[in-house]
Image 1 (tube, helix red, strand yellow):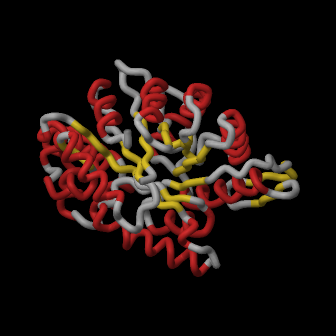
Image 2 (cartoon, rainbow, N blue to C red):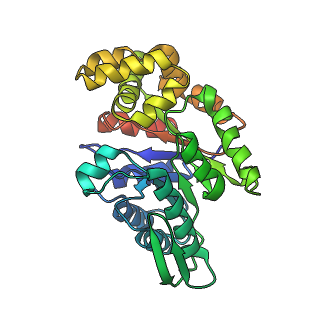
Length: 324
């Protein structure tokens, strides 16, 4: 089993320490998100100096706030300091975060993702200076970096999944129900074949929210909160869940946006929770982890500990779902 973990930032435990412990518990990759409050790249560099073999992934860096050249330099540098363990996870993020935090218009996000990934890959592995005159981003005569760092893309909708099919080394879906993953990837596979790419060379690495507690109901409640937050605050996530649960997704989003977080959480059914994540006692959670990992479409499983849980619960979840 190829098992990774997206480590949360919790107030009472060090993100760095949790990541180091993940290697001790048998995870083969550790990933850090980046929205506000900390640079995932700086933290991953610190983690690189304290670990030996675990892969280090960004999950995710947005394609707006750093230029393609900065993203390429960032990935290449992290790869050098970690002796070749870096994975660059990119995504479009959301209009709210890009416009409110970065003072940039959230315009043509899918096109920006396409051009950014294309440029980044050329800058890292090209044989000559790179010139690229895109519709939204460009470079002119930039020398390559000679670092072959895998680039994964966090794509949800069909247009963004075509970017994965054409350019990315891996796919980072989140909030796509397990029951829909095969069909969602088949769309990527069909597009890849049209572009003369072998779809088996695209790594499928879904984020899977996971909570472990001796009280299974408490674990499930934390998972429901995670699902409600994403469905309620991100239109792309709402659409992804609505492919399978249209009525519930709409009601959850309406309640969340009306400020009723409790109702939004209660609207997440047991069926939805089971189709979108892992929750339960240690034994129940490990059994579910194994059953999800056995799906043929998946290449690696990235367990995502919800941000709202306390540090002790985060540490317990990482420990109990590890492979040693």
